[in-house]
Image 1 (cartoon, rainbow, N blue to C red):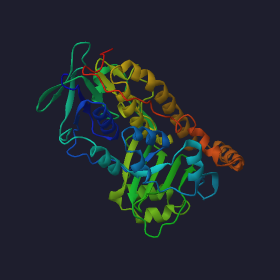
Image 2: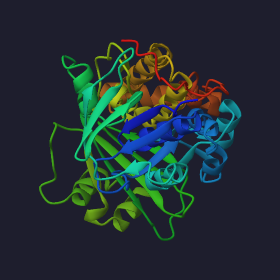
Image 3: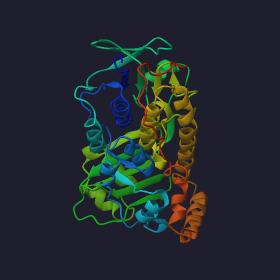
Image 4: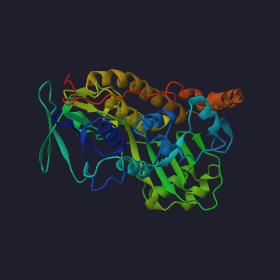
Length: 395
């Protein structure tokens, strides 16, 4: 038997590391190239739904992450004055989809994934450029500052502004501005007692959720022109937008320091790519299908991509066939939800909120129904290893 096939993963985020672990466990030698100086992620928390937790089961990490679940009891959607628009519960979600919803800091997940890789597999401060996507009988080639690497498989996990995507599909328009921006914080809030919730106001949203480590994850969104910044600081901007909303929002804002706040415009891929692969290269996560965070599925879909890619590592056309329809549908649904949640028309708001309150007595399952077909996904099952010449190099 010859040497195991070599997979090069460009990007050391959650999707890239999950793919590296899954491919390593399928018998490939993996190299992860991360351009940042460390794996410490830019971002705050991530919400993992039962679908991505089942994907993590494939690499043996699911139960470890489930143990970090903090949501219990009721939750749901509220108005800025605190009125419940729609109720749900952690127990109802677990019953409906066969598992919990877990919120954790991205750094925690990154650390657990990296620990599953062989020593030396991850190279930081390692910018990479795809030179040749490869093909039948021809390896793909990736250029780094230390020279070129040949690979049987290259995984483009380099995010929303993916250079790998631009090389494979140079005429695709890429990601576009969605019309709104987000703010995120993960902080301790002494004495905070609250029910996990998301609040919808005119052109604005706010979410507050507990983490297992005792901190609070809060996020906000508002419709605004692209590239905007607060004239003073982002905490002050949040106070202007949300300071008079219901408890515990004022207490969270009081605990925030300006330097705690991350602000990012929301971009998404509105025009789906023609494929998620070319030659010996596959795209995953935001590089393939960046979506608005309205459903909290961006990271979840990247994790799904990773284990499905490992399952189809010998036939990348099958990977595209398995992932493109699902992620396209979820991305479109996320846009619809963002339009609903960020509605600003007074008449539309009144109709939306009244309808949600009237339908709420139908039970917690009503709030969860939007995740049918998403959170109940299950990964493909396989015991095979990737072949030594991976993949078939289909175009």
